[in-house]
Image (tube, rainbow over all chains, first blue to last red; front, side, top):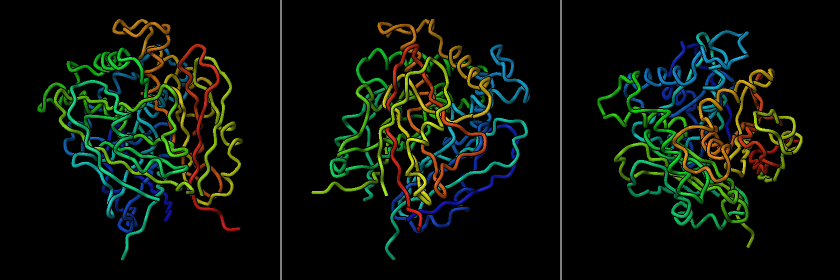
Length: 143
Length: 143
Length: 143
């Protein structure tokens, strides 16, 4: 079984945002798969998807602090600056974290670890709504 | 054909560890696939999987040195410090390297390059045993 | 439907290179798939694949500048230096960016966002030709 669906994530401020519930709710067909993979793909070059700690808002804030320090807006090497100071750092952060996640499906659910949640990593100050393309592939559950 | 199996990797100290053999031995069904993909997923937020040089222990040691310098325990921006000084750096390293690998299968084997090996990247001082979930999908070999 | 094909990318200098057209032309079977995934895998440990902005050469140059600054050749922690000053930084950059891309296929095409292009990230001064292994999996289009 294959299924593909676009998911629109509402605009969020720069930072790391937990979107596990939003993604799962958009994919009720997960429950039909006994084993498979859920591929999530963000169709942008200044935002990314990652998987990390799902409990403490502290962790997500510290992610932003570290990434802003590691890929600073005032890095002297930037030449692509026409689209604003947050643009080029956003591109680099997007590639460091990556545009997609492949998540295992087991017995009708995403087989995440206890502490794993899906992060939308928004690297622009005003990135707007973000388009995900979800592709599910797997074996149906026997009724 | 779909196959899913949990693989437990024994506890290892902080650092980068070559686990190619251990993973392949846990997946004898690889030999039945003519073409396919092997998805390896680590169900933790303070360890990751990567693919890199499989020959020199020097390389793996230098990985640890660089990552410890790039994501230092004494970074002044950390606020999530309750779980120890190695916790927040572990989360950031985990996202930089990522929780999964998708590896091509060709003629019954992982189609890695000559120098490519699977790294377990252990970012905690005492991370304990690590759970991988392996998902194989592909076309069976003709007998 | 499964299809697997090796694609050889011609030698390129150190830097970030747009190869979307080259990859698509090597995979005419994309047009036969209604929905699926295209897995691209680089069989090397000193080059990587990424997805980022496909319009401005500035962006790709700034990628190189930032990565060279973040993983410098003169980092004092390197011990694996026998293969030249660009070798160990190349390994670290390769793992930061990753060896593979999984791209959704929709209606016979890679379903990339408007601004997304495939980067070959060449981290060696003289990396030579690079071998990709492409694995397509999906549902055929109805004729």
